Image (tube, rainbow, N blue to C red; front, top):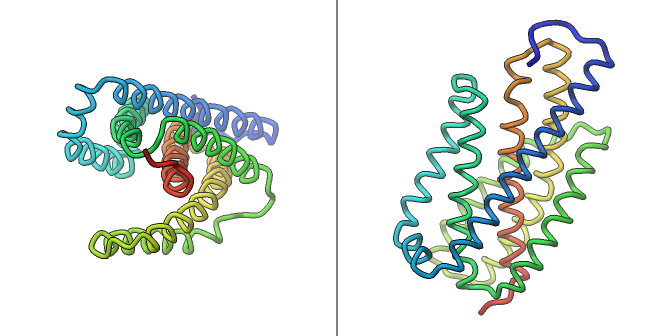
Length: 231
């Protein structure tokens, strides 16, 4: 654990490397849990029916966990944050188990593999680029709000064209978000290391993993809407 002390540049580089490794290990674990959960639920009709009947509860729990991790990030322990991340991943697995009712299993697998490759490429770019992607924060926030508003409106319009355009825009936004989040996680680790901020350093990997997990899942969903083959 890192405490309120000053680090040499060599120490800072080592901390950044270790924290980013931890972030991606946590992210990998969360994605793996989601995939396993979705596979298990979708292959058991009785459990799948139960999930369908309790979907409202699942969605509410996801919102509660996401809000709790954001609001109480500095009030709860790192281990609790990790547990919340993995519970959220399992709940997401419940939700995504329903995609096999709409899309063929083979197309889901292909889109998942494509998402993994695209996500990894964007994450690498976000890490190696010398540009500070923080300049895109306002654009990304406005875009997310726009997606939510238009999605709500389209519930009543039921327009397939609007849905397709939203999916294209959603893919683009979460591509940018992936590179942006990796870039900002790296930047935040550097800043916390240079300032000797052990509180941020202790939890940055979990919060970073959660942000990237959200990016990955949304990127997968929008790509599936565009390229998934319906049953």
